Image (cartoon, rainbow over all chains, first blue to last red; front, side, top):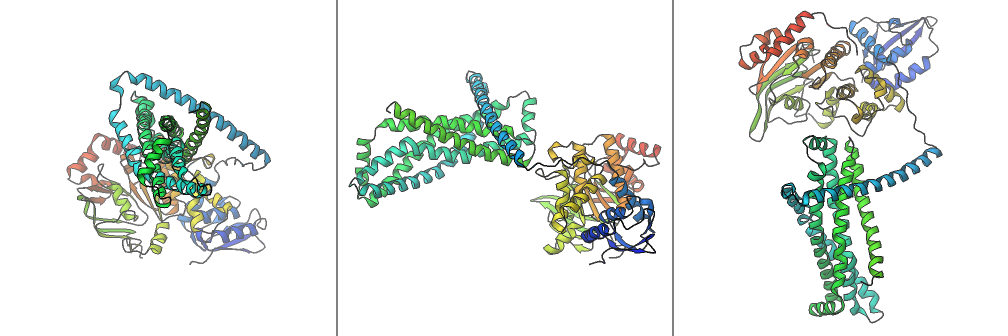
Length: 370
Length: 267
């Protein structure tokens, strides 16, 4: 460690003797020193820095504080030190900027609430507009096979569908087992534990198969869409696509939407099957129901309409997840942090929308007795 | 370390990626207080060399002494101290996009020194002004800055800890000629006033002619020559002849001969 910088008033305050190292290392001490001396130095006193040790920009800045920002009042020996002080002095004379203070009071809270509501409204408008844009792009390219991006679509089907199969199957299998276990336990008190078969069948065909898959896809693929398109946006790649005379919606969005439209129903089917198999496994183990009996009972009591109720929701969810994922990607601006914010927002929005639509659909299907 | 001992000393350096050898048997000395310009064709490994010196890339063979200490065998705590004595300006600025310019500059100050937020902010503003940025840029985010301002903000961040060596990777690339000339003068001023050693990678012939004390030519996987421009220009090597005697090289030299008096320094 070097010797910390010091300043000593000598001879009735007309001269200030500077010693030691005026460097970043000692800056906290120098700040206190200067604050203490402030006001005690006469405006015309000399700052004698001939005996100064090391000095850097931080030290020079505080030395200038003592000199009332006037480098001419500082006596130095070395030319390099003089140059340093002059450079720092020039920099400090730059016109100061107005610092914007952040308001943190009650008004700010109100403003934030208003801003958030406004954002929700704008998000909704933007989503509806974007869905229109996608549908228009569908209509444009449906009749023009040259604009079908088969390779890109197939690659996305692999990423969002094939690669997601194991995790969706495992997740549904486990939830299926849990549902069956709960059912078996509760229904046993009524001597109706065989109804566990219907419970598993109904819940997975109508709701859980598609809902669990949608949540998985939103977390897995929706977020990936946002991050992919978002980092392309941040690096001006989306602008480059536009200047090449291509439509970002055609190039980036269509393959992703189509891929999810293909993947989601397949994943949902696998999810339903895995859930029912999970339920069946629990039934076989805890209820002494043979696998054959399980299948026969499922066949007798659960109509195929339940399967179609669940499956009909898959493409809707797929479309919404893909649309939200891509739209959030396009909203990214500039920074890496923005990519993170919008990826979070994409997952939250898509899961919210999926559950909302699912609830509305449940009421709708019940009212029409399906 | 004596005054004559080079601040950076590279011997027998070899860098390779898989089978692709970038540097082979590369020697280079950088003296204290000089501005050394490193030139070479695209892909000749200038940035790789810089990354090796600052310890971001591990060389396959050879030794690099930074302040007289071997970069490869240094302990982590030692390395952290040495890194505080180096300022680096990356090619694309590499500013942290989630922080304002002032926060970018202040990061190292806050992390390495126990300072009040007030002092950190004051010192950050000083560096920003030293780097020639208007102070109202301090509260802006990197995405709101123009290309030239990003370079200056990155320079301000590299100066944050008052380094002894400044590594600059193509500081004037992408700047307009006026901005580039001002940047050159800024580096010259900073070197003269702060006593920096500057390791400068550049393609800008004007920069080479105006501010570099010595020029190191990186070609054929090694440093062909490292000397003053007068000597380097005369080396009988096709690449060097083409580089310095080509139309751009001649124009840059003519420009320095007519403007032999340096432009007034200033931000």
